Length: 198
Image (tube, rainbow, N blue to C red):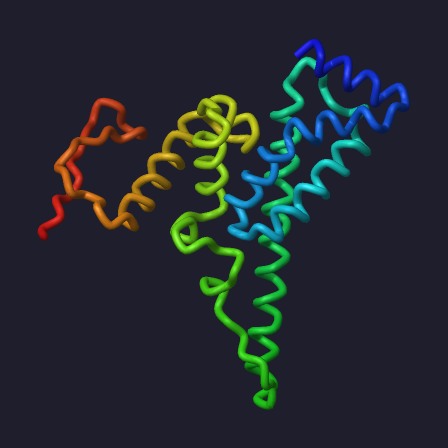
């Protein structure tokens, strides 16, 4: 962490090349998070560039008492969600346009069939994909995730619980065993998963 602060100090002193050290260190994390949120490798690459560019331009605003990794991932989340919102707006516009103009030749696919959604992750909403990615890929705690998503820890736990439940339903062997799971909203309450009949 001290080394990282030194690198940031070099950047603030005008050494632009020093920022490449931070890019090399966290680029894979940023791309993975962006890909998991958008479901698109192409978008992830674009978001990664935008996130680091924004971080570089606003480095003087960075609170050095906190990890740079958390800051850059927070920027990545916002850029990723902005990308999805813009794509949905674009698709919705042309869906309305195609309905108003019968002669339109190009078929507009529904949002659910858009390439921004991964076949499995499309079961989750943006918030669920973001929280799950931070927990699995970055080993972030519920508290750390809540700070990035600006919500309570309990809200994060419920979000993660719902995300895993949705994903489990999409797995071929989901529910094969009759195990008990705890409900994050009611820690003392448990329920059994439905047993799959061959």
